[in-house]
Image 1 (cartoon, rainbow, N blue to C red):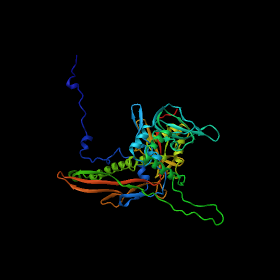
Image 2 (image 1 turned 120 degrees about the vertical axis):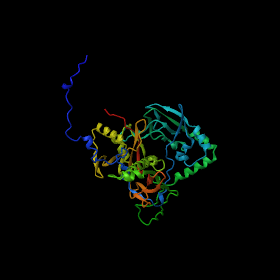
Image 3 (image 1 turned 90 degrees about the vertical axis):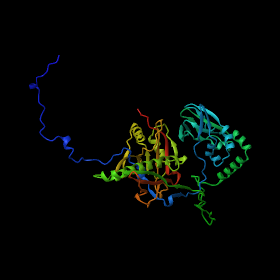
Length: 470
């Protein structure tokens, strides 16, 4: 049952005595921000690379002649639980580099025997006869030796695509210098010396190729695999001095500038009527350039032709000892090159580095880079880059690099002085109006990166970033 309130007892609404804010806004000028964009990052790689003028759009890296060949990783085909090596991938072996007879390579691949191993299993024992080449299809393997003070020491960590025992295919009577122990379960393929010799006996072209390889191996080289420069030191009297010259690679690597482009479209009505207080075309162009620069940094990391992850020398790729990024792993990466300028890692990887450091009671120093404080290890800054991929297994990579032409490091490549240049190496070219009164601008940036010598870039691979130390 409801009771109606008499009209004379109802409270009257308050009378408005001044102009309301909703109406007042119709006469006011709002304060506006410039257009914001979440994609913008710090882009440390673009900031830290020294940029070299690349006239003609091509940069040639001339190097001293090096005999080191065929030190890449090997790829495999998986059919259920069966694993086979891709025949052409055997060309990554130093012995077979440049040999392209598919039938012979297939015959060698067919003689590779699959072996599944478990964690903790000893694959080869130090001091036993070495009679097989081992190709790791999957898993991690530690190479151990005896330290000077007794006990095992880890010399190297091998993973997918790596191998050991190359010399066993040709040299008789040699023995394993290290013990190989599986750290995780996995699969490898083995090729015995006897099986390789059987193929060798039926393939004259392969025999010729192997003899040429042996003759190259007998030429004098320095510890970097470069042709040795003959010289004499510490002699007395009037000894005849050796003559010398520095040989160069006959086919040096050439880097052509890549391009990132887009067409920016702005309607003339927008540019004419809505250009205050902010220039619409200028703001559209600013955000477009930001997106292009983000794409540029992504390509410098991930492009298969010139990206740093794909072009880092295989000898400069190392594995973590236990998965997470420990101080020992960063030291191992740092020790493989002189004058390391900075580390580059995904922000989540940097967080994992911090957790591992804190678990050991270590707290990284901070250094000033361009007026900004960033974490550092051994005085080398650790810079974030979200363009470094993270796999579905939550692993990533850490790069360490030396930069600059004078240091034989990594350099960025670009060409300035472009027509309608808006920024160095970036042009904005007017393309005209169409029948819909839309103005078009072609926005282009040209770039690449070059690794001058192999040890300029190192990569710590398969870094586990989801580990939480207790």
